[in-house]
Image (cartoon, rainbow, N blue to C red; front, side, top):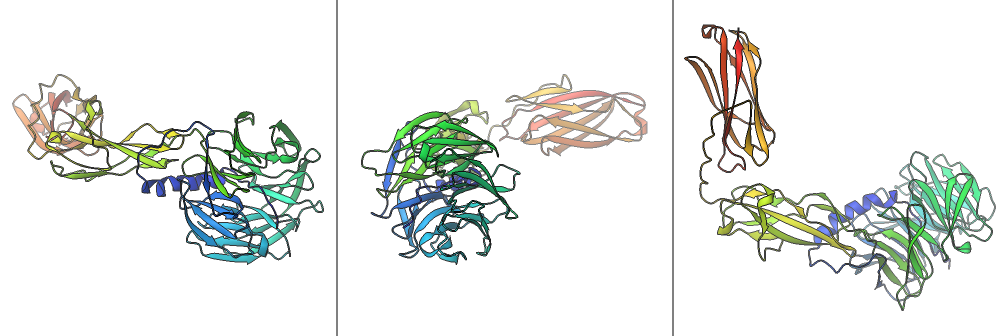
Length: 547
């Protein structure tokens, strides 16, 4: 049996899946926030005994999938480390590498049957035979052309397969018996896939047209394996010399001593690399310098291989010898992408149940809730409602003629986020007290409360018998109510009431009749705030010369 002991992937291969996972898997989980773990704390979860997992990837549905070489299976694992399904691929299939393809399926190298497999998230497998006999496909990754590219360790080739399952090419590596191993998309705009050569000790690349070039040689005995991108440049593991290689250019390597036989790597969510070794996980900074080395817990039999970013933003890997899945806390807490929203948002009265969504997050695994009561729509007036800590809340008389909002806090193994809040929603079973009448207008701009204002925009001059546009502009788009405009020149007067406010703006075209005569005309705009509006009524005025 071929022992791969490695997995490579660039961050580009997992970013989309991480975002999808945060929305799909995370939205199903609502529980007390887990205790925060220190960065690098490792938790292990068991797979089927003797399954010998060789790789793990984040699937398109927010679950993690492991390639179990000895068992001939793929395990589907949730963000709590629980195996929710085992998919049998065949006793002799020997699944070795696994990745998420651009088509929303899992793609697996099947060493035992010399094939590339396409696996749906429901467990249906389609296997596509590799033309070169006994090619031993080691690694697989999505290329910039939307196809899957794979290394053939014994075939000494780089292969390409479309998402329809058509193998469109196998391209020979120039050095004989080079042992192509890891593969990753190259830097942005390079239109290349970079790969390592375990036996020849080289790094090469292949263009989307199938042209293979070998670039640099590693130190003797380096045996380069895993390869990935960090800061849009190529990094690779050299277990034979316990070094991390950085491809400064296609002709130059920077070498960093790691103190352990690093076999694989992935760009983490916090700007550095996460590396696996036989007995530990290593975190680096953006320059490859070691931040921390975290040993496997007692009872784990390495090597640790196949690091990937999980749906919770932590680093997941497999422990081959003891058939386990590992999770290393990355120190990255969930990040809010969109705020939660309440349902319903109108017609709320005491006794009405209101629900909140979670919003959308990156790296979330669990959620907690806190409802708040606000005396106005100004969030500075919001206070927690005691014991209102579920995703739904039934309004009480204490919220009558006030506002409510929900705060959602997301957590993962690294800790909890800051709360993300919904917009406040008005509550009222009775007709709210009318807004006080506006005071006299004193200028072209007036405050309407809560830090908002209104302004009248009038022309300097208007010809008699002609029309001119008058505007009332609010500094906020949610000003509820109406505006009344009054035009007055001595005893002549025209009042236009109940003008609607659209996105914080009122426009009115006024025709000055010729019998109004030349001279100064006063224009007053009065904002009548709706009873449920968070703003107060106000008035503004200006003077226009009729000519």
